[in-house]
Length: 529
Image (cartoon, rainbow, N blue to C red; front, side):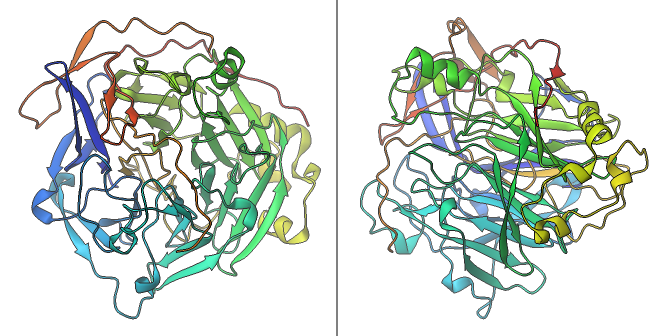
C-alpha cells in the first residue's frame, strides 16, 4: 500500500550450525517501493507482531481497507510446527503509521455483522473487488480455529461456499458455489478480480475442481457477478494452459481497453510420490507464463527456456509494470529425500509485464504498463466481434467499443469501484502492495507471500472427508550462502541443498541464495483459434 510492500505470516526455516531450525514468523516485513532495488540487495524492515498478541497464520490473506490507511488479515490456520492454541476465528488489522511502519490489533466485526457464522478456512482462494473481500472454498482442519480442534489428524472438510465481507456495510455473507469448483484438498486453481467489467467488477476462476482426479484445463472460465450473486461460464481460445495445481496470477488493465491476467507456474502429480521421467518433463513444461486477455478470452504463452518449475508460490504486481514472484516448491522434488537448491536469489523473481521477460531489478521509475504487442496484434486482426460468447449475460458484462481493442491508441475509460490486485487508480507514485507470507501457496489480493529462506509447508496425503462439520540437472548444492535482513541482529547461515523437516514429517523447501536462473530472450508464441 502506498510506497510499501507488506509481507506477513508463514513459517521460517533455516540451517543454523548445520541444524534445521523451523519457527513461525513473528514479523511483518516491509519493503520500500519508492526506491529501486535488485533481488540481491532488497532490504526488509521487520515489525514484530508478538506484543500485539495477533496470530501468525499460514494460508492467510491480506486485503486493504477502503481508505488505504490500513489492511486486514483473514483466513488460514495455526502452524503445524508445534502446538499452538486454536484461537477463535477472527479478523486482524494493521494500521499504517509513519514511513510505512504500523501496528497490529484485533478488529471487531460487530455483533450483527454475520461474522459469528463464519469459520476461518485454509487453502482457499481470495481477492477483492467493489470494496468487498471474497474467499472461495478451502477446507477446515484441526488447526483452523478453536471450534475445529476436534478434527482428527490430517483430516479436512471441504467448504462449498463463497464468503464475502462488504467493507462498506460491514456485513459478512456465505453463499453457495458451483459444485464443479469444489476440491477435497482446497482450491489450487486461480481466482482473479476484474474491476473493469461488469456492473461492479467480476471474479474469474479457472483450473479448479477435478477431472479424472486431475486439475482441469483452463478452457472454461467461471465468472461470478457479485452484486447479483450469479455464476456464469465462458469458453476460452488460443494457447490454452494445461491443468495444474498451485499457479499464481496477477491482473493488469491494458492501455487499449483490455484487461490482462498473467498466470505463472504450477505442478501436476496425480498419484503423488516421486515423478517418472515423463511426469518430470511434463512439470518442467509448466515453467511458463500465460496471458489471458479480456474481453477476447484468448490465451497466449510467453516463450522462454522452461527448466525450473515451481508451484505454491505467489506472484503479484508491484510498481508500474513488474510481477514479483516469491517462494514456492519445485515439483521435481516430489517424493525425494532431499530438496533442490532454489534457482532464484532470495527466492524472488521479477517479470516485466510489458516486455515479457525475466529481469533482476525493480525499477521504481519504470514506464507504465502497456498491453504486450502480440495481444494488441490479436485484436487488430480479429476484433472483439470474433468472440463466441456463451450467453448474452456474459456478453453484456464485456460489451465495449470495438475501436478500443482494434489498434486504437486511446485507452478505454473505466471506473473502478474498489481495490484490485493491479490497483489502477491514477497516481504518480508506484502502487504498493500487501502480501500474505503464508504456507501453502495461497493467492493474496495484492502481492507477495513467503520469502528468501522461507519454506512452504507441503502437507502430503491429506485425507479429505465428506463435508460435515525436468529432465534438467540440478545445480550444485554445496555452497553456503548468507542472508542479512535490515533490522535483524544476526546473520543466518543457510546451507544449500539441505532438507528441513517439520514435526509432522513434512518436507519443506529452502529458498537460498542461489544465482538467478538464466532465461533466454523472450518472445511470445502465436496463438491458435
